[in-house]
Length: 248
Image (tube, rainbow, N blue to C red; front, side):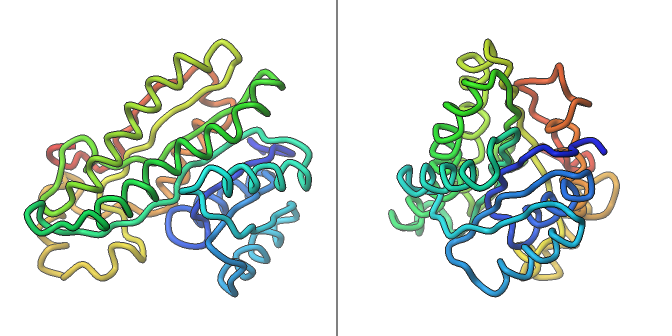
């Protein structure tokens, strides 16, 4: 098992890509601390799903767009699990509109949830990883943060910001063997993309040489590479996981 007895903190793991990452890591023997806005039925169901692999798993109510809440989440996880080996910054939302129609609230909401959360959680885990002299952080960005997308200026700015943040954090934390990498998915079939009109989905797929959307499990496999010893000499990477999507 690639992650046996390791401990991973995963944000946004109650559904979609985050849940797929949690399940993949659990298959590899990793103990999982994850969070959502509240201790919902969905969170409890994922908790039980993970525990079925014979690992320790616990969901926490936390708002990772706030530093105090992020720090409390991390402190509680360390108290319960003993240490932190891996952080997956996956939490994110969309709130689309053309720039001329986008409200300040839409801008702030996406930037806080998608970008500020990466700062808050990284800052919260850094002292623990720094003290133990190792750690792996994987930040989930998007090809939209590289190539942009119509009606997603807020999302593109947040996802581009994750890349810039990562490049800086690598330089600050690498001396303590803390590796930080970015996975930038393209069009992935999840609940978030489920409401996209079929005509638009078809158009997107024509821009993908592999002619299909990605699967959450494929994003999870990329995260597994960076989180495990398979990626022991990788830091500062930006993996384009998009099937060759144009503008990615």
